[in-house]
Image (cartoon, rainbow, N blue to C red; front, side):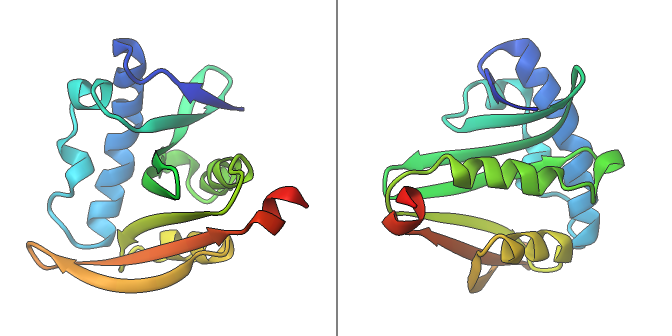
Length: 157
């Protein structure tokens, strides 16, 4: 079940962080980076975030999270992660679908992932995201930016 997470509450932020850290540790290994920004998060940074958080719950356990920023014409997916023991079970796709289905009007959805993170790249492409560009950030980490455009016809039909 997908729910809106009240990340500004300490107990929820603690659950988000406990789910986020192992997921992003796996991504860091995958893209050959010692540290990536989500691994520097704390309970406080999550509580103070301006993002909107969606959680995938299985029974009473938080096993996946999608967070995004909504700037009217653009939505930026800032986090999408799943507990490693639940990888490849369609959870990330379910979260992404929930976001895309909830969008009305014309909008562009943007997301960035590690270029070497092939499962993430395949997920975004499966859901209609198009690769826009690759960038390199210190200390030499290669990232790929994707965009998805939702038209009015898709939202009314």
